[in-house]
Length: 184
Image (cartoon, rainbow, N blue to C red; front, side):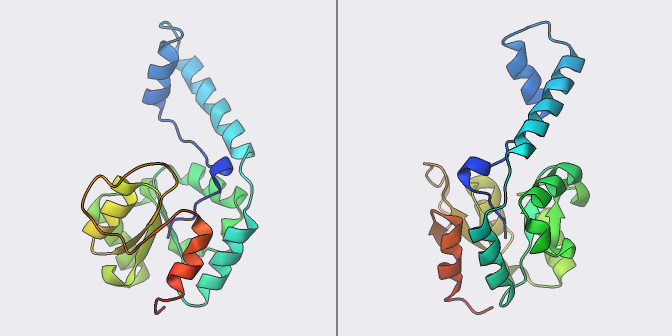
């Protein structure tokens, strides 16, 4: 299950290539060192803005009594673990149930990523419910891997495919109610 920070606390990840392209629009001669320094500064400022959401943490604590809870995410291990630490997720999610693309060697929505989650947790795909806010990455990826998906519709986006999620929610705290009708 993706743990999603509140909208104001969402951390933005910028790839070096994307940052360089953006910065070159302002200064075509920007150096690689300046891009790197900008990225480090941006990451530091972004991380400082992350705060635990007690409603989300309490919901995860409640769900842990019925479900294996975990996190699946793309990114670097260092960066994602720091985000989780700042959001207070290290207190409610077992380290054995955290799956980061850099450590797995595949990114969401690749099938091998989801297969690694299943094999590590010793459960079948149809026993997993992935909660995510990206239709293409999280929802389509999970469904294609044989998992159930709950779409956290945080943006005004429409589904890009005919895939059918298990549920659609507008706030992460709605997940508790959706899963109250599910066998853990």
